[in-house]
Length: 79
Image (tube, rainbow, N blue to C red; front, side, top):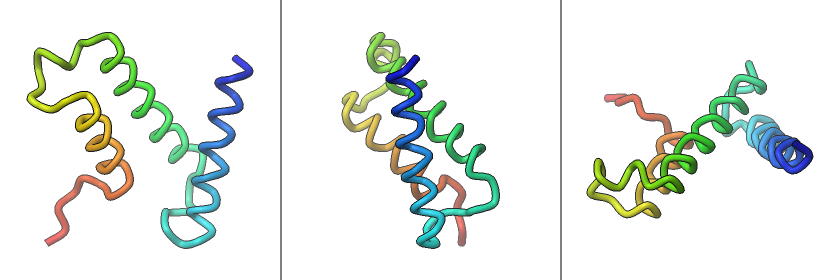
């Protein structure tokens, strides 16, 4: 659990810095941290278990990168 707490604290600190810089919403840092943590944990678990391979035409690296991009940029169309 210690390594998990350290990683989670680092993620929270990075998101706090991004919020202070005006790059992400400040309203609910705990929810934002949980969103990133759970999404990254989920995609890595799926990739490491090989459960995405039969369902994706992307390499594991491409898929992980795209998930992170969607988290950082958002996935809603804004036109």
